[in-house]
Length: 242
Ligand code: GTP
Ligand code: MG
Image 1: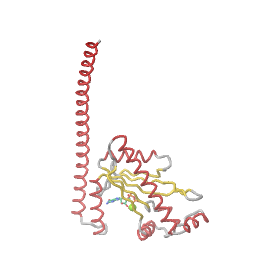
Image 2 (image 1 turned 60 degrees about the vertical axis):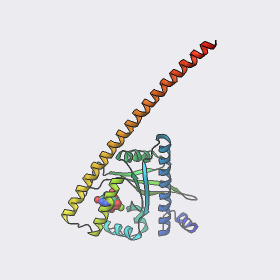
Image 3 (image 1 turned 120 degrees about the horizontal axis):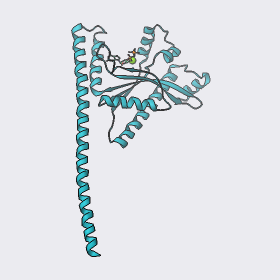
Image 4 (image 1 turned 30 degrees about the vertical axis):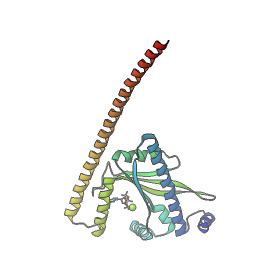
């Protein structure tokens, strides 16, 4: 580790595969901690967790090189840093679509993070049926004598969107991108079912919240009456004893 940081300091640029992976791993740790804190704060204030779970991953050397070649770039360290935005990836899985936007807003407000780009595939789903909210951000990684803004791709989606995307990804790979028409059509139909399910779940959750609030209000109202009675009783007793 020491060697890597020293190598980095010497040239003040990422000059080896080890340094690259070290930086992206550090960036993933920074972002994961931030998300944990946001989730805990939300739980503390609203008694509710917007995040179901988080997955992080570093892209394999093979897929980094494959991506660069596809873009027509030589597989150099410089090109990896410049052109591959998803070497470090964080996937946040939420329960409801509303949580996605809540989280995206909270991430955008973190003053040390820079949002480089946003792709909202929830408002504009891909032709495949894919839905997800993507952000490319940079997070500062503090080294012994320098700070390196490091890119991280954040994908935010619901459990249902994740279910669909995982299956679609497997099928896509099985057919190497050339799935028969009827399978693609079936997947698109499943995507629409997933969107409807997400909508229903969101509505159901809102109905549950409204119902609970109403019950709380009634309970508080009831308790209020008791309190009033208690005060009346106390006053009467006080008057008697005077
Ligand atoms: P990539 O070269 O695939 O990274 O795409 P991009 O640079 O154009 O970015 P985009 O935001 O479109 O996609 C980034 C990532 O989103 C992909 O690597 C996948 O993880 C995911 N993704 C995008 N489209 C699809 C899709 O149709 N199906 C599935 N399952 N995942 C997708
Ligand atoms: Mg990718």
